[in-house]
Length: 102
Image (cartoon, rainbow, N blue to C red; front, side, top):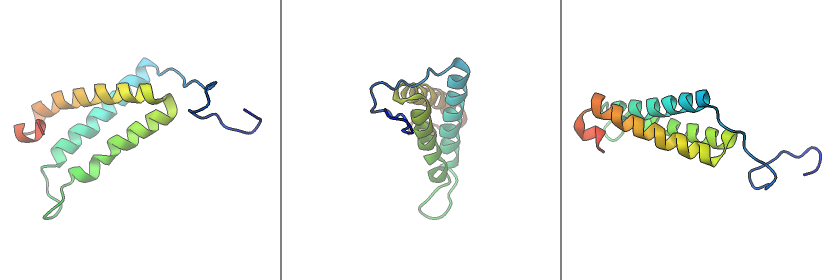
């Protein structure tokens, strides 16, 4: 890599920094919050063919993309799995059963 170039994921000499426990827990809570909010908001219609959940769910993808860029794909994948698992557990509790299992 020459001077002035930024490292990228395809550069084999580049390693993503390790994600700390606090950052991991924060990311999991945010991911779970977005998914739970989407599961609750999908019950509120915006018009005849769209619900508010359709507008909130893309934030989960934004979070995954930001995590992937900062800590790498492995950390983003771990946060996604843990966040979605936590969100399913919470959604079963707070959302209607039809929405929670969807």
